[in-house]
Length: 332
Image 1 (cartoon, rainbow, N blue to C red):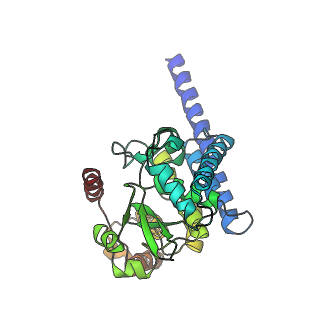
Image 2: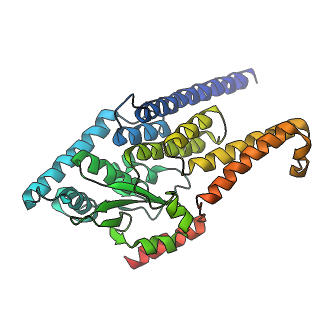
Image 3: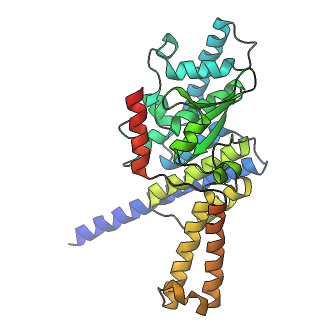
């Protein structure tokens, strides 16, 4: 019995130390990305992606290896551009990245980067969401594939922007004439804006506010990585409301206000309101006006909810998203 207790205690201590060590990785990630946004470090999307994924994998990634692999691929892309004599074209880099990622060619050893239809939702883990796993397996989803494209575009110094739809990320870039195109790296095709609006139930308000379909600038792109960090944090620790969550969404809202950070803010506000209601001994929301402190908290939460409605938040259920993925698979 005594031996069993000792083993249990040692196990608890070990798990606690592992959690503390991983928490440190999350703190490092938000600190570095905050410094990027605040102008204390250069904006570096590649680094931001690495930081978030390294936190999720508890420090098991190697920055030098990650950086070296990106650099190796970048050199291949430059050779592809030179070989075709396309250096004089603004979109030469876009062509090279798209071709390298989508086609079976000698440059990628006839091993293009494809959609992971087996784990696209990341139900068991977030592997398909990560660029680090994409580099190893050449399989990803609507998160890792456009992120990889964006990293390579930055390395080549060519224009490419991340844009979002409900539960979706894609690439926007201009052609040689300055016309915008929506590039779906999940299917290796270009989508009409009208198709995206209809497929993802996007409202006019969602477009006008910039919540959806907007080409994100570099700071907003870094902020998008903070959203990823929050998702990884919840996946690892099962926590959606605490000081770390507050720090992340506050920094995100500062630079990317019309975004899903508002959802994290709303959930956080509701969590604290519910806790305060429990301390007060009530569970009925209709009783809130009887307590000034609770009423103030409720009003703040309601302001966030109304703001989300105002900027056009749209919902897509996992079932609806899976249906769209299967449509893409069947139509390829």
